[in-house]
Length: 168
Image (cartoon, rainbow, N blue to C red; front, top):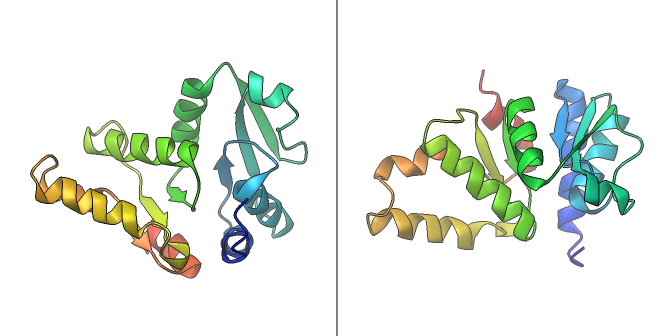
């Protein structure tokens, strides 16, 4: 995990806010990294935490054993499909290539109207600003229609994530 303490702090805060709001977590099922922190905080605050993990990752002892439910699937494709089916919204914390893969797939599926749930980039410490600039560039050059900017939201504060995912 990166040494910047703002990322784990934001992950813990998001999990706590989810529990306080009665929002359950659906995620990749691991006990490590930022999402493991979100899961632990959400559980501690009273939420359910449902993990979806491929057999190969689960067998490497990455699976979180303290979840409300851990669904083991065949592979990464099944994992994403199942997570998208079970979730009501997607909040994308800072992360690596797997995070980018899931975020891009969700945004693409939303653009193609296979998926119509809120997607929020959780922009802790400006982490997602380079991606937002790239997405703007792709739109500005005509590869994505201008409506592409409405496919996702950006929350600069963790406190804004749940209202962005579940507007009143």
